Image (cartoon, rainbow, N blue to C red):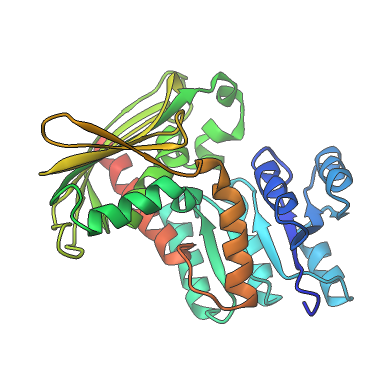
Length: 334
C-alpha cells in the first residue's frame, strides 16, 4: 500500500492467531490486522473486536470483500492443517500472499498439492510459518558453525516437549483432522530447524508413544540423517535427534555438536547461547530472546511482499520437505 502499511487477514481465530496479532501490534503500526475469518462467530468476533478488524465467516466472503475494495496485502492462515487446500486455492486465485502456519498439511498428499499450487502461482508469495528460523540464537549458531566455532558438525539434538493434557479432546490429536500428533506439531518445527541450520534430511528411524487411546502420538523420538554437505564444516551424514512430546516435563532445548565443541540453547534461558569446548570450558554468549521470532517473521513476510526482499522464511517447498520427513518417520514407527 502507498502508506507503507501492511494489512493482513487472519484466517482462523484460534490460539495461535494471538501470536500473530501480538506480532502485528508490536510492529509500530506498520502491520495492521484488517480482517478475521472463522466459521465460529464467537471466536471471529472476539478477535475482530480486539484488533479492530472486519469479521467474516468464510474465505469466500473475505475474497468477495477484497474484490469490492477491502484493502488487504496478505493472509496469515491459522487453521487446522486439514482445512488448508481450499484456503490456499482461494488465496492464490485472488493473488493474495500467504503466510501459512506449520505444518503445511496433515498428509503428504496435500503437502504435495500445496507445493505444486505454489509453483503454479509463483508470482504470489507463499510461505510456511516456521518461526524458529527467526530465533536470534539459532541464526547466530548457524553463523558460528559456518565460521568453524565447533569444528565439523556431527549431531543436531532438539527437544520440544511439554505437558498438554487438553490436546486429548481437541482436533490436535484427531488423526483425521491433524494427521499426526506431537511429532507433526512440535517435531515439524524441529525438522525444519534442522533443515535451516544443517541442511536437508531423511528420517532413518523413529519410535512413537501413545498415551491417549485412538488419538495421535503423544511422543516421538526420530533419528534424521543429513543428506547433503553444506560449506566447510557441515558434512553429509550429520545425525539429527528429534524429541517431541505432549505428555512430559517441559523442555525446549537445542544442542549442536561438533568435533571441536558444542553450542546449546535453552529456551527457558532465552538470552544465553552457550559454547562449550572439548574440555568442558563454557562460554556464555548474549543473544536476544527468542520471543522476538513471531514479530520478525511477520516483518519478513511484509518485506517479502512489499519489497520483494529475500529472507529466511520457509517456502512451500520447505514445508513439503518437512512433510516428507514426517511421513517417513510415521511409517518407520509402525
